[in-house]
Image 1 (cartoon, rainbow, N blue to C red):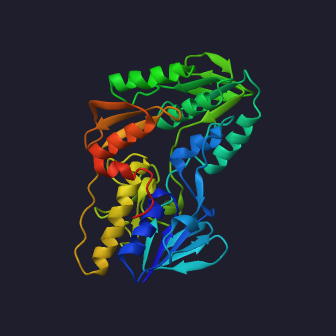
Image 2 (cartoon, rainbow, N blue to C red):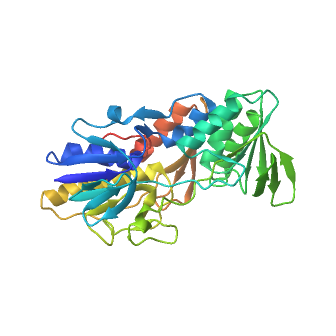
Length: 352
């Protein structure tokens, strides 16, 4: 049985490894445009020079899994067509191409490997006293601003978002913002309308100079599903059934950010449980058992605030906020989230 996994992010890597463990007869090929697994939630560390966010695929995949360097042009009819003109036949495929970033002109994107590397190079040559602006008030923006401020205290760091840390309950919100202030990050609650010639323009009409402007907003997904003729939602995510299979082809599982799972937002904390469920569903099908529906369940939201501090916000299963939160050293927060949330501990896991 041939299985092709398109994409080697959190969802793709976990799916491939879990299938290799559960379906011994599977011939698994992982197709990815680069030879490395990129730990996307650590790209802010990559650009700040505090950690490396990539590892060779060979070091992450189970024995027997083949990795293929390439970009997929189309998937469907039992075949994956690559941009070099070759193709891979499959009995089952896993579409796991994640989400993408559409940066505003004049900014450098944080949420891609190429963008993080570009930002790292630009940041390294900034002289003391320069200004770095981070656009985006969500987790990616907060973590980027905190990491840069801690790694380069000689720079002036600013974070701009319609509501910085607005995705947290009142006390957790205050904790996040006070931690940013302690790192001397300037917080601006406003929208960005333009970045041009080193000047950032805001919705309020205000402007300020910025030597390096980082775009920390993830939006949209690659158009592979739509390009392949699969049904997609308004955001381009592939429509799936209750078992995470394409509504057009039951041989194609869709997992992670590119899957139109009702109620799901972009998050690796959701990508890994989806990949686990889809891989287990394939194993059940091979064994002749009835597949079970996927159940979406949120546990928490969390942000790191430099190397030693973090805030975790617990949520209800439907992602509405609870009052409970935890703050302190990063390791303590992760341990507490994992102990209370179970699967949340798989946030950065790619094994099975």
